[in-house]
Length: 348
Image (cartoon, rainbow, N blue to C red):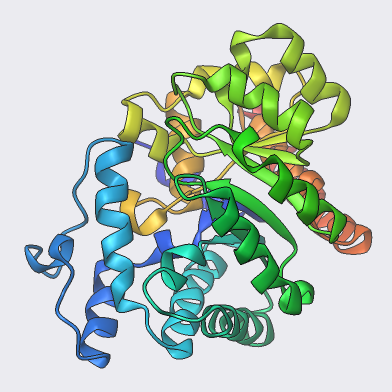
């Protein structure tokens, strides 16, 4: 367990979060509120919980079996607004300065919610948070890889009228038998439309290395979500370094879905000069926001406080923001490092 001094130091550090799913920020409490507001029955995963319990699952498949049904409570623009505000308020309390948020429109359009309802609600939440909290935030639209590429392309077409509100596109959901190449044409079109590209390469999948190779060489992503299995191929590590492709890693969710938080792998990649970052993934489900993920690395991995600073420096460097804003956030981080580590021996 992290000491109170370490927790306070982590809490004070300026941060960016690049791997968090808005739908994964739906806490049991908020889900109950939305179900009541919309006159809906509680989803099965919620009906058996008391007011203080968290969701229950043990691997990726059981997680998704809870994750998608819970979204039924999201019906209106205000629901999506409140979900975004809920997460951004918590992120702001943890001194997150910039966040890039995934959202899964197909999980909603497939049940009758319109794309404009989703996008306008989330956009409203981001604008309110930016105005009232000062937190910087952007949206990344993900395609569900266990759906068809035709459905993904149709979703991309629906997003084009909202191009200015979506900074990039990604790929998530069940990776089994759903390689990135399945969506190559969709990503090519998205790139032509000006979207930045990322994709999940979940840890310890049957074809992890093949999928990582595909997103680098065929999809030509700007960064990779998860992706720590890249350590199995030295040549791919060199490609990541050469191209500056960063990884958005999520220690706590790793530990739940695979019983290994991949701390050694993350540190190995950090030492090799890969731009690895620390993120929360689905904080309402894994009961850990970004500070708790950093604490896990600090306590259970072989890292110093300077390393923890470097994770955040990496995050700001690979974030999809303007140069002036990136430099501003990096200056805040540099000031924090200078202020707090000058009196800490060896940065530990």
